[in-house]
Amino acid sequence: MPTIRSLLAHPEERRPSPPAPRADLFRVFGVGIGLFAIGLIVVLVLYLTDRGSLESVAICGTGIVLGGLGLLWARRHR
Image (cartoon, rainbow, N blue to C red):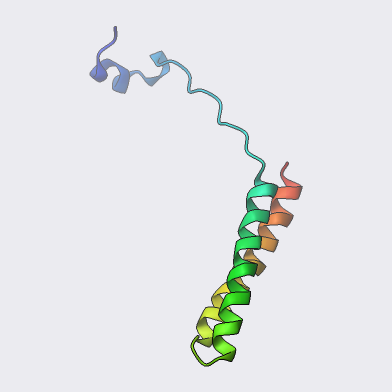
């Protein structure tokens, strides 16, 4: 069993790292966009009844736009 000091001095003696797990990012971004869309509907209702702020609407809209960009990225990097 190699010591920590010898492993730090010679990292090539370590076992190889396991492969990263594969995830369907298209589905992850889709769920995120759906949640931001639900949030946008709630925030719009609150804003129209003078209980919400325009900043909240902008945050949800930005989340949807960034999620859409994430969908494009996920589709390109499958």
